[in-house]
Amino acid sequence: MIVFEAVSFTYPGAARPAIADLTLTIASASLLAVVGANGSGKSTLARLADGLLVPDSGRVMVDGIDTADEQRCWDVRSRVGLVLQNPDNQIVGTVVEEDVAFGPENLGVPREELRSRVSDALAVVGLTGLERREPHLLSEGQKQRLAIAGALAMRPEYLVLDEPTAMLDQRGRTDVLGVLDGLKLAGRGVVHITQDTGEAARADLVLALDAGSVAYLGHPAGLLGDASLMAELGLEAPPIQVIADELRRSGFTVPEVSTAEELVEALWR
Amino acid sequence: MALVAKDLGYTYSTGAPYESRALTGVDLRLEKGELCLVVGSTGSGKSTLLRLMSGLLEPGVGSVRVDDAESVVRGSVGIVFQNPETQFFAETVSADVAFGPKNLGFSDVDTAVSDAMLAVGLEPVEFGERSPFTLSGGEARRAAIAGVLAMRPAYLLLDEPTAGLDRRGREVVVRALLEARLKAGVLLVTHDPGVFLAHADRVLVLAAGQPVFYGNVTDLLEDDGAPFDVAGLVLPDVVRAQVLARSRGARIARFAFDATDAARTLAGALGGPS
Image (cartoon, rainbow over all chains, first blue to last red):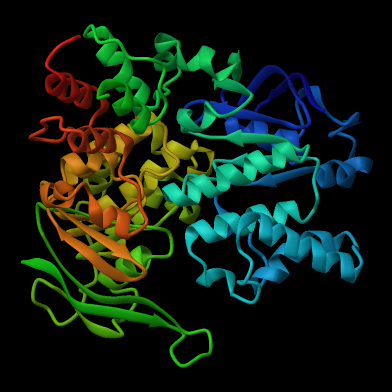
């Protein structure tokens, strides 16, 4: 588990804390979505989870290890994989397979295992066949998946992803969401930071942040069903839900639907 | 007066064993006051097209002309890259936004800077003296767009300007771009065309570097948005709901691009609560 205990963090020179008195448990084999407006503290939370930032007060424990303990810094980092928003900032290799191998190679992983880790990670994200490609020749979506593969090659217990689908088209999104589901089923704790409430609806739990504090933590339906809380948090309901709600308000009977197909199926039998 | 691409093509690493043809046969014309969308799956050549149209890459085949000049003229075409907030370098937001107009020798740099910041909803008094590195993701994106708007380009090219923005940030950027269109031609690459479809004069759909559709939104949706299928794209949910309803016999004369409007359109087609 990753446990946030009354965590606060303020960036140097900032007027208010980016994270304020946050308490949260991230379990293995689960998918937690984190939503909130820009500047609500989502990315800071990601950096606190893997010890890239340490709290000003309170503490973050990763499988019992305090992220502020400098002696155990690498134990924390190898347990928590972090995929940041912009893949261009995280790609270091001159070809794809080198980039994926970078992390585990630095941990001293033996050559044979290194090979299997790289090929496994590339298979999971669907980049098999591009091992020798130069990263700058990849499309943005491929780069994003490369960044995820780099984190996976570390075989982390937890994976924290900061808006991994923001740069992807619909198919790329579906691929990455499938990867996240697979990781959860494989027993990993996955934290998915996203602007898209439709993506958040697929999670086991959703955390909504507002000015660094918990505004909602619970089942996605509880948040998505609360239109006034959504508006207050600057969140947008999935469009199909908006259409269904509007139709209900106009007196139509519409069941719970989440896709355009389901909506039309329900209305035009 | 227009930014015009003729039979445009480009191949990366020509002659190398891994040479890859990124773009072939693109014809495109962007006039001032127009909004043109470019959509396509990742790797379809969208970003390459923007680099060619802005003069950053020399066409391998075909040509790009600005207002009938032989090539792209510096200062007339502004480009906002993906994740432009990674390119800040000045100590304050206003110094960063001022960099372009200063280099172009503007006599009214201060006005250009404050106009551009206001256009993206960043109050100069509040944000001007802050370090760009202390901005939130959404604020940083808007500051980066302001840096290009401040150069008052006749043609404005943007690569995924709303990706990663929250609802409010997106609304501000959309408004800023529609305002920029009053004076400039706007060419916008996006995988989330949603709200822009309501305003677009033309859409170019790319698949594997080739144009599969170039025309207005009505024609694009004529055949249930078939060019999107060909390009491996999915229509935005709001539009797809209406397309699906129409294929089931619903009478829909005009598509709505906003969820609330779409609900009204569907309610109208249904005729009233059953």
